[in-house]
Image (cartoon, rainbow, N blue to C red; front, side):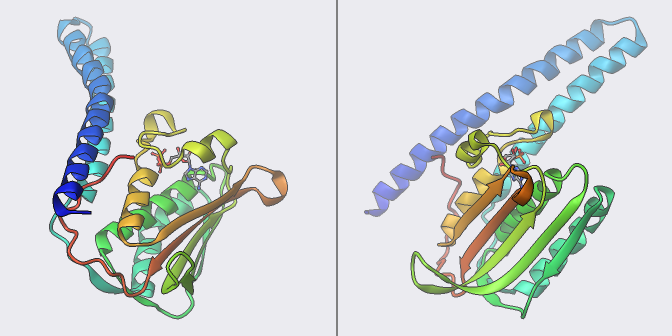
Length: 247
Ligand code: ADP
């Protein structure tokens, strides 16, 4: 494919993405605007406060959406060689507190440290999404297993690393399974953006890797396992100006 074709495709993808984001931002923005008008016109302090609170919730949602989408578009980072041990110990440290508040026990099985080349910030973002989602899926507590092993990427035959994040949470319905990688698909209502897995999939594809999953709602094997497979010698070049692409 020629360079201009590639950039035309990127522009088209960016156009589609902008339309989706504009739509998603517009609804909470209108609600926030209306709520603030109502607050200004209200003579009752308690009522005015509740309108301001409503506006704040909607604005928080907009912030979450823009933060998620802008982060992946950052131009600054370069691929670096990272060790799986450092990466995952850092991740566990960040989630220890949230996990214990949700009565989730983290069970790490990190094996020997594996070094691989990646855009570290982006891979951290993928792992954050997987671990955050796993904890969300266990409202009554549970077990979160994180496992790291060497692997061969079966689609390229290249040596890789496999990071598995498993929970014994609620699992996914057939409908969720077909839609979970779509932008703005969420089952978490106001608490979700539905952008985490959509962005994660793009990051993993940019790295020449795979994001696979298995999920069940049946009592015997209830829960979800995500497998993140990445090449060790990530042939990434400098993609630092690659924006997210809508499907
Ligand atoms: P969000 O977390 O904001 O909803 P995501 O794109 O990260 O957005 O996830 C999309 C949906 O996929 C979630 O709303 C949830 O329904 C489902 N999902 C993701 N991970 C899990 C998991 N570990 N267990 C059950 N459902 C999950």
